[in-house]
Length: 363
Image: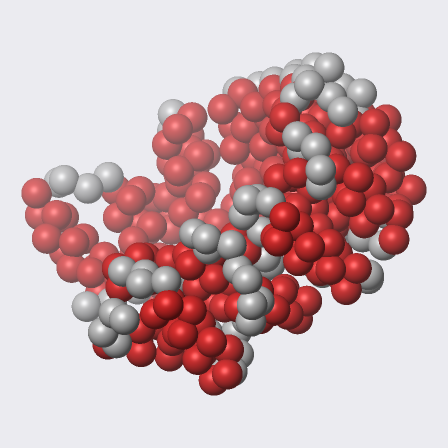
């Protein structure tokens, strides 16, 4: 039974016993039988305009789901309502009812609301809309009194990817809160602008481990010779794990071959889990996995990583699959360990090797 049919069956079973909220029933009707909603629309609209605040919000969401034109008008009204519950609901409703074009001015206005939850809802709404007209408003929220909202504003700017956010984000790397610095570093990585490298380098030596890691991964996302050289410097210190993660990000950027060479060298000289951070589907990552499979002197305890490495290749390479199978047999790897290591994204070659290994006797 499909989920729509199931919802319809539940509604039919509960309705005679008054065990379902009328607004929930209206929402199920919108989803299951939209044509029947016309008979309920007037009642839902009445609640949206005159019920308690929670009921009004729920009713407006039903109207928005039904694409009723009144929903957009309610959202605009609520953006300036005295009831904070309505103002908090307005940005999400405006997203549901927004048409193509710039973000509704009511959402931008909500960025400066005195209520923190309203400002947060506005930030989230602008991130969902993805319109670059919101950049200046979101940059202003990088200075919000709330550390959580500063971080969310940084995340939204990273998602938008507008270069105008570069210098405001760099400035915010000096934020007093580690979680905000972490979010800002991640946003700078998303922008991918090499002008952020010196500022990110200054963050690498800071006490907060999460911020260090975010800075190194951001360096990798920016990529290029300067970024790879910076990551190379960190491979032999206490931040090697994050440097490897940064190099894994660099596999998606120009200069991937240099990053791959460093990762492969590090795999032979340390116990950092390189295979476990390789990005899915990247040619340079597949080259690393294959090279390691054919390495004449692999280190011990790598069987799980070898399986995961092959699973990241996403191709049907019988030679690689055969090499993996031979390596697993040589190491007497238990079948359940092989099965547990193989992720759901496994390609045909990895599936072939797994099937053969499960059927093969130990040697």
